[in-house]
Image (cartoon, rainbow, N blue to C red):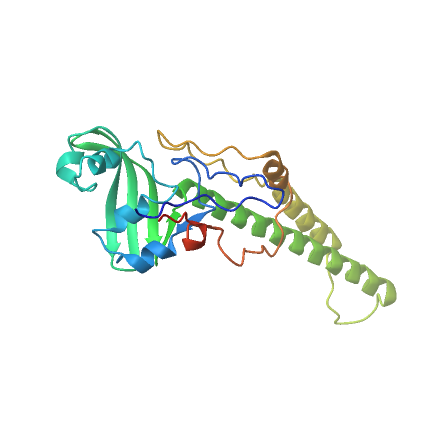
Length: 253
């Protein structure tokens, strides 16, 4: 009998680990890798879907699963096109390193609605982020640096104004020395401060596609979102991997 993947080890207090979100939700923070499977089977276009079906990203109520139960290849488009509902399609292949799998909703043989995209990169499976989330993150980062630039410019102008006042007090009669118009400096400083106050936060992302259910943030996550963005964001050294390796498998005689 083939080995069956088991959930992760229990926590130190004996409680079971939290289960991953259900398929179709935001799971961009995790990835899946089964090294035992990769050591046993080749990763190609014929077997990559069987490997994907082991991951928590796979929805077992999809049309592909119905084909597998009936001993039909799960990517057979001649059968999938006659069905309606959620299905997965192999969208792009660069053997053996990259496989792109698209989750879509089929309404009829000629109409499908893309929902989510997953990719298998060197044996690890990830969920691709939504394009709206990518734009939102980039716009938020751009606004942060624009605000930082305005703050730096305002502080420089304040320093120049302070130096000009000190120079005028120490030597008002120095000939040929560069002078500053304090009123002009204050006017520019006021303009920069008003522009900085008028900067709007990043616009909200567009609505998610039909059938996509984003995960609800916890209270801790909501509290962390209110903190100011630090200048140097620390990226995790390793990806959180749902390891379904041989150490976490049941053994059968």
